[in-house]
Length: 273
Length: 259
Image (tube, rainbow over all chains, first blue to last red):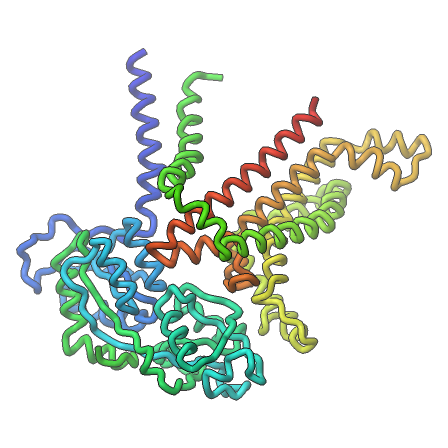
């Protein structure tokens, strides 16, 4: 009995390992090369680097990653995972493997830091304010937050980020300040989804960042909000405690905060921290 | 049955049951009552039950006739119709959502015309029902069509030969024969509508009270990170309980009729 039995046990264990181990691997980027020497100097960074970043950072971080990779030929930066900061925070606390996390507000970074997932202290590297995104040509003539409320004459379809997401939190702050009561037709989980709905014409208006309007390159028009500064979001970045490639993670954080990093971020419309 | 078959079968059961069991382990039971009776949860559950019921009704009204047409058509026609009605089942629901936007969205095929009449479909409860109908209809059609084929036309021919009217044949012969299949299809259809997420998220959006059904409420709660993750898990538990109840009811009913 024993040989077949053992074979069966081994096979089923293997199937289980594939079934569950395989699932665990889904969604995580290739892990870093474990042979990377911990004493490597910055010019000798090797292995992989996995970055989780807020959706609003997508253009800027792609550019930063490309430059960082060019500077360290031995390093392979995985395609960056962009989503709402809160979604990424949940994924990290659920064990997603990443080396660097950049969030669109301090509140979300704090939840990750409190869970003990951050290496050192998060550092602020950029800021952003909201604008009202409307169709090109602004057909409904929206020019202030008042025009989005229930009392507005045009009754626009408004899409916002959910209040749990940084852009939604900032939007709520601005509405509260202006005393406007807005009922969005949908609450999205990241700012890109809001932009998409306005861009495709399914919604009349949405609150997105100045940087998103700039990145949309004419596909939406941005209306400045009076007193938008009151809800300025600051972006913190941190190397993660469980980073597979801690050296590269720390170096990338330094690069984001360097003069060159600031220049790239400014070119995408981000403000200084 | 060769004995080794028990091994992969056992693994299969583990794959199905372990994740749900893990969910129960993770659940903070003390927080369940508050989480499931919170206004947000009740809103979502109510909306889900109402929209899934309407969608299921629409599926029965439209799907049973379609199943009849397929079952009584010539082989090539039936093959084409069957493929078309199975399509939503194999497509990712997100594709359904994009397709519905392409049809009924503002810039969609019919959407612009509807807008001109003052009708807006996306971001409404109607959009939720349409999305649910789209993804759930195949379950109804396939179950009923299968039942019709199994039942055959023998009894119907005899009844018609004895002088029964068409409607009498339908009511007294066909319906009772396909009863279990129809019920199974309806229940599956309802369960699928209840669980629908992808097409709803794209086509109907995510607004509390209007389009935030249970699956969207779970997604939203989960993305809130930290505190509200308990709510997400509690809501998931609720959805599982409803699904299991629905399947048990179906099981019980079918065994009764089989005896």
